[in-house]
Structure formats: structure tokens, C-alpha cells
Length: 417
Ligand code: GAF
Image (cartoon, rainbow, N blue to C red):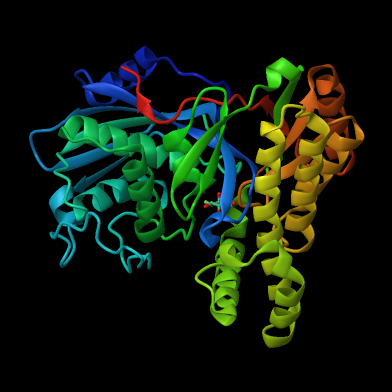
């Protein structure tokens, strides 16, 4: 969603209701909210049917909505001051009247010509996919406002999609489970907005829990919340937003995904998830010879990253769990993303190296990469030192001043009023 960066975390339901009333007149039927996320570890594993460990954060998109008597959908983005209006009937494409819920939806090819492009493709895409799936979406006015910084790799799009999905379900009178919400939001992004993302962001937004990270098996869809109480350790997870928009990496993302799919086909497996860590040396050699060395490195990242997620969770669950081994896995993850997967950026590398040199237990880029944010595992008494060091290093390199905020593990998409 191409709205400007906004700071601050919570927006009161009353403020969102007032925004709706100023924009559309009348009272909204409710207010729904869906959070952004940080991924603690497990990057670029989701579209390989692997493991991820995200948490929803206390930056969210808010949607106030009211049903309309006609078949018009109006969506207003507060940060942009823009409104988009579409006819729900005009959104229905050929052959789409069928109820496709539960059908094989493996085809995620983008629509050739969606009715709406830009930021509005995300909320309108959600209305479109819900109709495609046979839900009785009613006409609606939807007012959207968000505190998830855009382009920061913190899933502002997934927050927008999930908030819109819940709002449309709420005003239309149907229910969506968390899994349905995440799945339809992802499909809207893949097919309508044309972004080939995996399920990580939408599942994080839908399933988020206060005080927990989510251990997700993206193949089975199983979500296992793991308590993540850094405050008890006098520590926190610091988000370092480099202010380099990750949007520049859109082709890079699609390219990495295609390389993984090519490698899986070459290796005769359904997805790279199926390559065990123990088989990595032979697999690397086979791919390097049969395809190319770059693709072999992409495979190595995915296989080792899946293992790191499992190790991280095992450490979290160990009774003697401590922060240094977690930080170590984060550092390994970052190095792998930088060197093997090549999705980091100089600003991310600088943030990670500087944070650790200044006392963080570990740090890594989070999200798709090519810009966006890093996260650092920091003892509370080191927080100022880490922030100062990163700010100074960015200034010395002539980079834009980064923004910092603590990632607070928060509840997932829900109705708030
Ligand atoms: C982006 C995508 F949207 C996710 O699906 C995931 O692939 C992530 O990059 C990398 O882990 O956030």
C-alpha cells in the first residue's frame, strides 16, 4: 500500500470511526484491524513449503466499514487521501461465478488486466477473490488507516488485505476463519495485485498472538505459537527500518522464487522443503553441475534456513534457553541471505554488523529484503548504544537516518469495535 510512513503504534477505534464519518458520513458498522509482522527467522522458505517463525507486531492497518444498499465498493486510504470506487458486479470475471472454495487453487497466475492497480489493488483484490470463492460480498464503504510503515518489509500489504477481508466479511454477514482469511488475502495479492508472495505475511497477520512467535509449517498450514517473552530476559527485538524501500526488489523476489521452483523440478521434489540438510552436499554439487552454481547457492540458503528455524525453536523451548544461541542463528540467517540468496542491501548489512558490534546478541534482515528492515536482539541496557551506533554508521555512510522501534508480539487480525 503506497501510503506515507506513519509513526506511532495504536490508533483508537474512535479515531478510526471518526475518520470514516468525515469521509463517508454516517456511522461505520464496525472497526477491524490486522497487524504487520516481523519474521524472526525463516526467510524465503515459505514459497518452498518450509518453516517460518514470524510474530505480528503492534503496527496495524485499521478498517472502518459500513454496508451499502447498492453493489458499489468504495475504499478510502487515509494516508494518501485517495478514494477508489468500483462496482462489485463489474469485478466478476468470466467463469468466476462458480464457488471455488476448496477447489484446487494452485494456479496463482496474475490476472492479465485487473480493474484497479496501485495501492487499491490490495483491498479491491480481496473483494474480488472473496467473490470468486463464492462469498456474498455486499457493497460497502471502507475507510483504511495504517501505522505499518510502507516499503519497510513489515507487511503493510498483508495488514491491509487482512483488515479489508475481515471488514468485508463483517459488513456482508459471513465468517472467515484465520486460515481462510490468510489464504484469500495471499491469493488476492498473487492473482489480483500480481505479487508472487508466499503465505508468510498473511498468516502472520491472521494468526498473530500477544507475546508469542508463530512456528508455521507452510506445507501443512499448522501454526504453533511459541511464548517469546524477551521482557523476562530484560531484552527486546529492535526493528531498524533502513528507509530503503524494498519495492525496488520486486523482480529480484520473483527471480528467487523461480530459481527455487526450477531447482525443485530439476531435483524431482515437490518443493525445496523436501531436501534434508544431510543431503545438502550432494544436492549442491548436483544443482551446480546440472543447473548452475548460483542456483545451487539459492538451494543451500533454503535448506539451511529451514534447519535454522527448527534449531531456533528447539533453543526457545529448551529449559536453559538463552539469547546468544538465538542471536547466532540470526547471524547465520543474515549471512546466508546476503551471500547465498543475495537479497540483502548495503544498508541492511551495515545495520546488522553495527548492531552486533555495539552489543546486540544477533541481528538479521527481515522480510523479502532488497531494503526494508533489520531486526536486532538486544539487551535493554544496550539499546541506546545499539541505536546510537547504527545511527552514526548510517550518517557516516551518507545513508538516510534509520528509524527504530521495538517489535512487540501482538494479536492477529480481529474486530476492535
Ligand atoms: C515477502 C513475501 F511476501 C513473503 O511471502 C516471504 O516470502 C518473505 O518475503 C521472505 O521470507 O515478505
